[in-house]
Length: 86
Image (cartoon, rainbow, N blue to C red; front, side, top):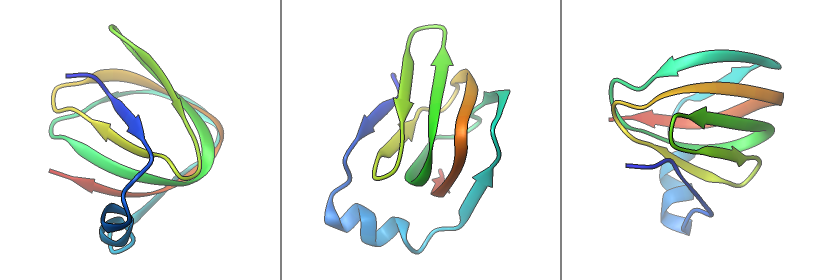
């Protein structure tokens, strides 16, 4: 299953606003998803590369990461996001 980047529905925004916030400075790091993640990007500029795709996202994007994904995060501008695992 690929990484999905799209604009959220109003219901998705309302739900994600109740979720915790994660922040990360400009950096590059590998990541493995043990479970799926949904996130709503509040700030930043990020590119995520996996073996099968490269996606970029920023403020206002709703991003869905599949379970089992191995990827590299490239944070080009500090990122701030609401997130939910599972």
